[in-house]
Image 1 (cartoon, helix red, strand yellow):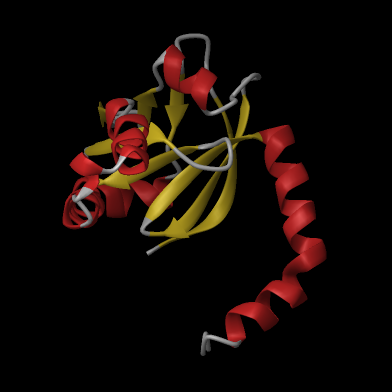
Image 2 (cartoon, rainbow, N blue to C red):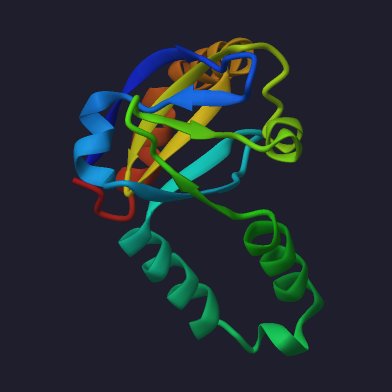
Length: 147
């Protein structure tokens, strides 16, 4: 399970170091794709298969414009990324742009089955917003038997 928050930088060659804790679970190859909420998602190959299978299951998508659009957005921007011997992946420029990674400082957040890559400033804003609403969110989730 991917959990935790790690601060890293993207170097001048667009390489991002993956936290060693995550590399143990991820293996040598991952999928990097456009995420939601202005970040990037990193999936292990096995979790990527599960995600794409779920998308295929709802695949009356060929007949629904919203489903076609989301599949194009999510799957069309995805790339296979090899984790090199130094534990880094290459982040294509178009994904940096889509993920809002404007500077070289990023935060990598473990979210159970994926890691998210956030611009450091954007992450701080998002985290503070959620932190201020955490009790209300827990209450809302609890209504659907969360814990």
